[in-house]
Amino acid sequence: MVFQKRHVEPRFPPRHVLVLHGLCVPFCKGSSKLSRKRSHGKMPANWSVSWAGATDQGKVRSQNQDNYYGDPRGRFLIVADGMGGHSGGEIASQITVDAVIGVLNELDWDEVPEPEVLINQCVTAATDGLKDWVKTHPDQSDLGTTLLLWIRTQGRVILASLGDSRIYLLRENRLFQITFDQTIESELRRRGATREQALKSPGSAYLSRCILASRTCEPDIISIDSRDSDTWMLCSDGLTREVDNEVIHEMMTRLFPRPPKDTVHALVERALQNGGRDNVTVVVAKLQSTTQINTENL
Image (cartoon, rainbow, N blue to C red):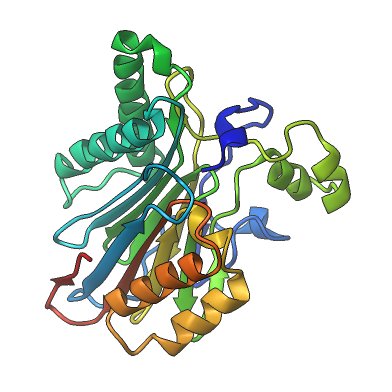
């Protein structure tokens, strides 16, 4: 996470939940007309998740402020990219990951709440965790973190995003960027500004939303029907600053037949080869219509 993104501008209203039937890139033209009925999905009852994840400090940063976690049963994945001085970023991302794990480990997976309810519970727990830390560490009041959540339920996947970490989906050899960067520049461009206009706006590189101790930000929440052989990728901006979408697509497609750990390793290595200017974290999960669950941590 770059230094200039510590400041957060509270300019924009929260997003609503989108339920994507089949598949549609969220927030594209016409997405507001999508049905918001609960999705039933097309995934068979017996299916599993194989996943792998890795994080690297990179070649420039003095510490790694990224954190990630994957549920051993393949039910949820978390990525957080922290920010803040005096090791605040590393602390913020770890507190956030731990808080979300606490919420999801207590969840009744036979009665999963609606996406808004579940995600808001996770965000509130993370925000409260940062607030509690700052009470005893006031010199770290500027700490914060991005947050990505991937939660598998029957027939669908619930996603949540705060910040500029990203979620991608590889389906039938097509790569979809499911989330968008929650920066001032990106928000302005989504509202019709040209790239040049957005870049000239004060604080264009700042995050517009993230997990903070000072206030609660509304996440983007997305629900997508699951399909066999879907491959998901969650990453911090340490990957996307160094590797563009076209290269990510080529690599994920080429490595699709191989275990997720191979894709993770290749993407992290490519980010390092291209400069490694930031911490880089990559988590890849593949859905399979089998009963065996295989989790691989690097």
